[in-house]
Length: 369
Image 1: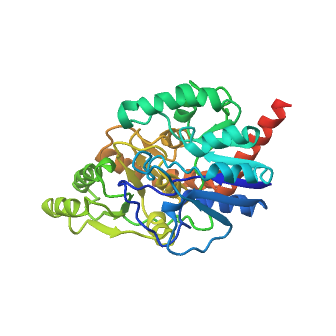
Image 2: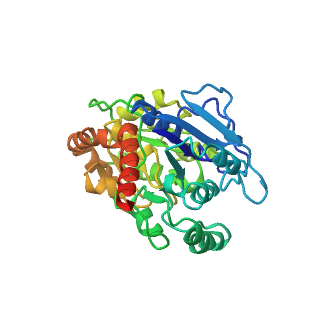
C-alpha cells in the first residue's frame, strides 16, 4: 500500500516556542512509519514545518508544511496548515490509505472532506480539550465532526478514547490500537539493578516531586535503603527538584540524568525494577510502552489512559495514590511482572500496531461493500 500519515505535532512542546531537535527519528509517529515500511509499504509523513529538525535525513519521504494564523492556532497545540488542502487534492489518487492523528485536528478534517473513504483517524483524546473552557472542542466534535467526518474510520488508542469519540461519531472501531514501539531500538533485560526510573519532562503536571517523596518513604523500609531513583529528562523544574532532593538528604539515592537518546534510555530503563508515573494530566505516555517492551513493569496512577493495559495484562501496578508499599510490592514480585512484560512485548511493536491499523481499515472497507 501507499500510505500517507498526517501528524502535524511530532513531539510535545509545553510553550509556544517549539524547541529545535537534532533529529525526529525518536518520535513515536516516525517509528510507526518505519513499521509500515518494514511491512513492505511505501510511506509519506506530513508534519508542521515548525518541527523540522536540524538534521534533515530520513528513512522515507517526509513533507513539512507551514502553519498559518499562528497566534490563533498555536503550532504546538492545533496547527492550521492550509497547504495540506492542495497537497491532498493533488495526491489523493496516489495514496491507498491516509492515517491522520486526532478528530480534533485540521488535517483530519481536510482528509475527511477530500478523501473520506481512504481516511483512518487515530484518536487519542479521551475528553474535551480544556482550552477556552472546552468551547472549541465542543463545537468541533459536536458540529464539525458530526457534519463532515462521518465517513472515515475512527480507531481509538485507548478504551477511554473509544468511549469519548463514540458520543459523536458512529464509525468507531471496536479494536483499540495503542502506541507502538520500535523493538529494534528497545531491547529487554531480565537483569535488574536496585533502581527505579522516571522518564519525563521536569514540569509541574508530571508531578515528579510526589514520586521523590514517595521514594523517600520507601528508603525507610528494611532492606531497601540502597535503592536509587534515576530521573531521565529535563525541564523548568529541574533546579527546584534538585533542591528538594538535597533538602531531604537524598543526594546519594536520586540522580538526574538529563536528556537521553532512545539507545541510552533503553539501557537504563531495561535494568530498572519499574518505571514510576504519578502524573496530574496525560493521555498515552510513550514512556509506558517503552518500559514494558524493555521488560520493565510500570507503577502508575490512573491518569494515563494506558492504565487499563497494565491492569488487564498484569504489567505492573495501576492505582491512585500509590505509595511505598506498592514500590515494595513491585520489587518483591518483579520476576512475575517482568515475565508478563516480555510476553506482551510483541503486542506493542510498531510492526504489530501498523498491521492492526491496516487490518482495521481493510475490515471496515469490506463491511461497506
